[in-house]
Each structure stands twice: as C-alpha cells, then as structure tokens.
Amino acid sequence: MAGKGLVYKNIFLYRLLMNLLYAGNYTNRFTSILAALKNKGVSSVVELCFGDVIIAEYCKTNHIQWQGFDLNDSFVKYARNKGYAAELADVVKKEDFPAADIYIIAGSLYHFTRPELKQLLTKILLQTNLLIISEPVKNISSNKGLVGDLARRLSRTSKNEVSFRYTHESLSGALEDLKTDLDFNFKTIGYIKKDLVILIEKNGRA
Ligand SMILES: C[S@@+](CC[C@H](N)C(=O)[O-])C[C@H]1O[C@@H](n2cnc3c(N)ncnc32)[C@H](O)[C@@H]1O
Image (cartoon, rainbow, N blue to C red):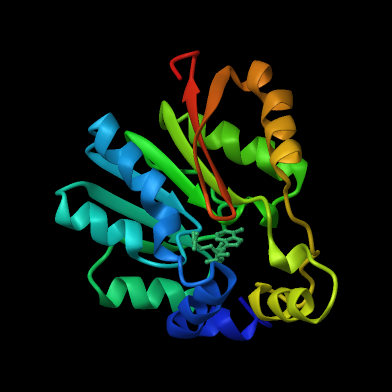
C-alpha cells in the first residue's frame, strides 16, 4: 500500500485522528454493530477493511470466531501481533471470501466505486445471509475549508484516492438500486454520531 496517508501507517495515529473526527466518541460508533452481533447470536464474523481491532476484541471476549481483511500492511501486522486472524488483502480483487454468520464493513464504503460496491456485495452475499454496513454520512472530511482539508489529507489511503463521501440519501439510494438484483432487504439499525448503521439480510430476512 504505497503512498498511504500518515495515519494509515500507525494505528495509534489512526485512533487519534478518529477520536478527533468523532469528537472523542470513536469507539462508541461500534455500539450498534456490537449490539447486532449479540442480538443475532452469531458465532463467526468476517470484517472487511477492519483497520482497528475493536470488533475483533469483542469477538474474542465473546468466543466468536473473527477473521479480518485489510490492504494496509501496518494494520494487518498490528492485528496479527495481537493474535487475530487478520489477512492482507484487497477486497476488490479478492475472490475467495470465507463463509461466516455475518460480515461487517465499517467506515470504508467510500473507497469503492458503484460497480465495485455491487461486485463486493455480490461476493459477500454468496458467503453470508447478514451484512452490517456502518458508514459515515456526515463527514467533516467532506467539509470545505482547513479542517476538512486536513481530515482528507490525513485519512486518505493512497495519493490517488478520490475524495468522495456518502450522505444518508446517497447510501440508501445505492442500496435501493442494488437490492432487487442482489436479492436482499436492508434496514437502519443505528445512527451513531456520523455513522449510519445498516443491516442487510439476504432473501428478505431483514
Ligand atoms: C477509514 S478506515 C476504517 C477502518 C475501520 N473499519 C473503522 O471503521 O474504523 C478504512 C479502511 O479500509 C481499508 N481499505 C481501503 N480500501 C481497501 C481495499 N480495497 N481492500 C481492503 N481494505 C481496504 C483501509 O486500509 C482502512 O483500514
């Protein structure tokens, strides 16, 4: 992952930026995700673009099998050193996703183009009935001005990254467009700080 932004080289700098962006509530934004894992009584989780190990830690404590994929070697190394089943992978290119009770993708959909999103959801729904998406929809990095510019520069994963963020409407709209083709339903299960948290369930089970 050449040319990655500063915070993507170090998990502690990443947490610092996230706490800045979420006004000290970085870990709270996982509340809806963890509640859904508990409610659904899942025993295996795959987390795409995991970045940090907050969900992995919850899974370990609750005897849930966790597997994570990320293309950032620093984050993968950190997770592996902590004993988690983290794997270096570009989820756009990776074909062989593992089966799991539930998939999670948090704070990361904005990295993918619309065709990539469709391909990704297709691959995920071949391996699970449940997917949680947590995506920032009010983001200071989409603000104009100095603060937004700083957030954009620090958080980009590569020098060529295009600046793009979802709004509540554009994310719901993207999923509405895909749900018939990919045969899923979705509902909002949380709205925590800047993040819209959505549960997708295959074959109308949401
Ligand atoms: C903003 S961070 C979100 C991390 C974490 N899920 C969270 O919610 O705090 C985005 C993550 O997506 C990862 N990522 C971006 N594009 C990816 C790709 N194509 N394949 C795998 N990981 C990717 C980055 O390395 C980074 O860890």
